[in-house]
Structures are given as C-alpha cells and as structure tokens.
Image (cartoon, rainbow, N blue to C red; front, top):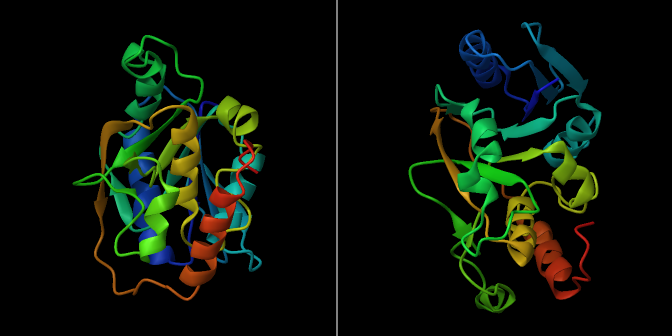
Length: 225
C-alpha cells in the first residue's frame, strides 16, 4: 500500500465530502491508497477502512490509524477541509531533491511536510499567555496537516503522530516544535480549502493541553514520546 489518508471525525456530513473527493481524484492516480476513518459512524465508500471511535478522542484516533494503517506515506486530514486536486503530489514532493536536500547541503533525516492553507501558521499561536514565547527558540512553521513517511513515524516519532498526552489541541504545536529541533519544517504547495460548517471550535481542553505543551518542552530529553 502506498498511501494512507487519515481522517478523525464525528461529522459524517463533512467527512463524506472529503472521502468522495479523494476517491474522485484518486481514480486518476497510480498510487494505491486507503482512506482510514476514525469515527462513531460507519462509512461505506470505496477504499475506506473504518476504525470505531469508542471515546478516545480525535488525536488518539490519528495515532491508532497511523499504527494500524498500511500505507508507506501517511496524510493527516481534517473533515472540514477539502484538499486540492494535486493532493497526491505531496508524496512526490517528499521524494524530490527540493525536499530531501536542505539549504546547508545535508540530507533531511525526518521526512515530513505539511499541506497548506491561504497563509502559513507559526508556533506559538497568538494570543497566548506571555510566558509561552520563552519556550520557542525561533519562529517555527506549524505542521497543521502533516504528511510523512512510515519510517519517520517509527524512527523519529516513536510510533505516534501526536504525543499521547494531548487530548484535542496543541499537539500540532508540539510536533512542529519537535521537528524544528532537528531540521526546519517545510510545507508543500498543496492547498486545503475550508468548508463552511456551523460547528464552533471546542476549546474545553485548551488549558490542559497548553499545560502539557509547556511541560513537555520544559522537560524535553530528546525523545518525542
């Protein structure tokens, strides 16, 4: 299997649109792929592998799917963002010299990039408590929708996309901070387009996850997990 697309969702009305679109553009691709969906709902479309959500939360779902999926390349996708027609080209980018060769001439060790929106996001996000900025060495690109190799998952991330202590938020901040400790994150030129929905952002776990973010950075010992 070449590619595993990972979607964690409790909104089937949105996820169905993303799944159907991946299958539509995937029809013209040579890559073999699966669409892994972690959800309390069941999806019956072609190429879908269902993972039942029993209450572990979306980040738990992404880690579970990453560990049990079969693709050599993994995409983290949102249920309310529609990818561009060239979605599959992120794999080609990870294979390219533009990605593999760093500015200093060395080869990249961690093979991860991110899909992009209209403008890049950076960590730490604003607004934040004033005492956050001292934790970040420099302006760091946030890997909001990471695409990476399975070797990177096992060799550098200890088998986890997101640190298992996070519940809902801040996990992408920590992933980006960790990658930046080794080499500067880089995005590929593949966009995601937000779909209009009436769901408000759930911030009930923000404070807990923010405290985990600070603690992990303050106590960093070299390993991701």
